[in-house]
Length: 423
Image (cartoon, rainbow, N blue to C red; front, top):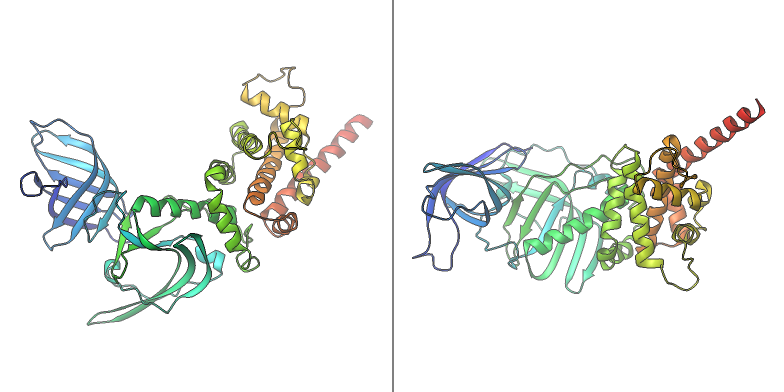
């Protein structure tokens, strides 16, 4: 975390005619240690229609710094005194009209655990500088991956060496970044959508929820970068072995990332459901329902109505991945899956005879694990992975231990049942 910063200046709602329409308010912007942004305005809005949200506010402090504040809402309103607002995004150094305005051509994103994927290590170098001032140094990047998402839109995953020199001290440090490079200006909204998309892919690769911690933008032909201040959602520390290891799959990963981009609209919800399920240690009925709904969505979008595909969705889903060793080892029962889905979605009471095969207790936990593995197969297939590649990924990642847990439980259950019968 960085230290909190306070900026005193004037703030206003931008208008097309700044001479006659502009109304300025004195106030203070505070950016806290967690990057949350609070704006206190000395304003007396009596006589105006009350409003609770601002799409954009501009500002200028006493040192001449410019500010663009987006999606701010009033949290306190003291009549004839002042307003207090909480902003979703703040950019220092420029005035931007809206999140939809094409403005930046490059974007640099940091994730807390991206270096775990690349197996790089951060240089432990003191950083006594203002992050707003550092200069991008080209030609010092160590490149791990690169590819093209669309015509004129590229991405890279790199280690960047950054240097800062002032009259007192030279500093240098390393950052592992996901970069987006466009041949034309894009809006913050568009760039953030690409970031969200990669966050999902990275979460799938690490098999744990991954969110950006720092975002910077750059205009074409400019050295200066602009930081986006926002409250970052926490990332979950991944297991030692990723689902999609970068070094083992380096040649194929650009294909998978490109395919993930091309089908993202169709699988975004399914991937989000999977990430939600693997990000929690809770295995009760709601988590099972989340995964089961995603599997049903996959069947509806990709399998239903195709030649040779059973109209019994659960059988069709399991048969689709009969060459995947983990699915064979898990031995998913379509009838159990169907009854369990129906029982919990229809909120049936315990002991309801309509769903005799429904799983409960520890059986439900194991069925949820099986369904997570099946859903993972569905998503990996859609991003272009072969059965052999899926088998390899599963054997070398946490999925192997998930399968081992299921087999161990079912072996013990079988032994216990045999002993009970014999007794």
